[in-house]
Image 1 (tube, one colour):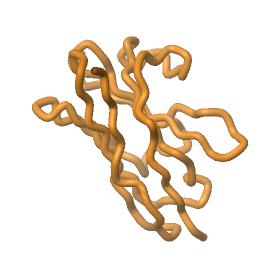
Image 2: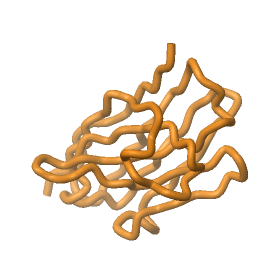
Image 3: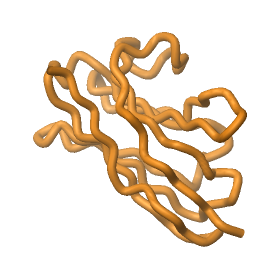
Amino acid sequence: EVQLVESGGGLVQAGGSLRVSCAASGFTFDDYGIAWFRQAPGKERQGVSCISSADGSTYYADSVKGRFTISSDNARNTVSLQMNSLKPEDTAVYYCAADPWYCTVMASSGMNYWGKGTLVTVSS
């Protein structure tokens, strides 16, 4: 059974930090990139970051560059997103997804598998 399980969301004040993680199982980890998307209330799902298992390359949306860092522990099939200098506009449900395009497309319609999401709330 394919599973992507997010953890680590919560409530933090603006300027603070959170680390969210995605544990993958049931598929060959090396066959995919792992992407993070987020969806705020009333907004479309947005690609945030991605890491490719093929070459370790990474992608960051302009809105999070310099504040978020993605990393992968291939031995544990886990990808983490360290989020620093958080802003109220970062508030959203964060989802991880298995990306067959190795982070080259970053379209939610192109992802094969999804987790159920974890809520990140940043208070002002």
